Picture 1 (cartoon, rainbow, N blue to C red):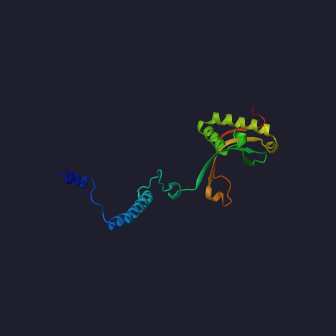
Picture 2 (cartoon, rainbow, N blue to C red):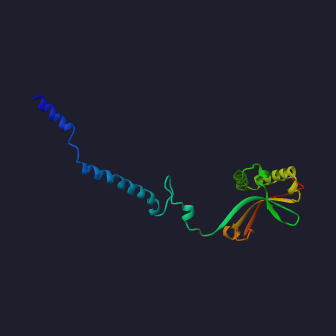
Picture 3 (cartoon, one colour):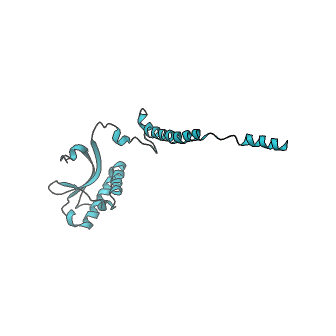
Length: 175
């Protein structure tokens, strides 16, 4: 009786295994199902309406969204010579050798208003005087926002379509 009881409890705990054919089918189906699920996950961001961007899957809206205009506003500091020819001031004269840090310095000055932009203008003139050399011909420095057509710019039309001067300071009178 004890042997029959032991056999019965063992059979309940360990049911008979599936045949080799069933196991092989499951082993073949599993990668297919997993592959289809991954394909659906990758495809899903493009099927949303309106498309949304998110981690880890992205539909790259900065490239896929239609733009109404190619206009780009650029806040920068420009040095002008006596002939009125302007050229952007180098980043190291704005307080950083890093282009993005210099850009942020100018953007924050423009956002803060004329007073902060004027202070940046005077600091730039001081740095230009210390640098000397190629900046010796500058007679005026401006903190400004210029609007360019990005596509036309790379086709040779490098003049801004619109300009707004935030602050201007003559080189000889700056403290």
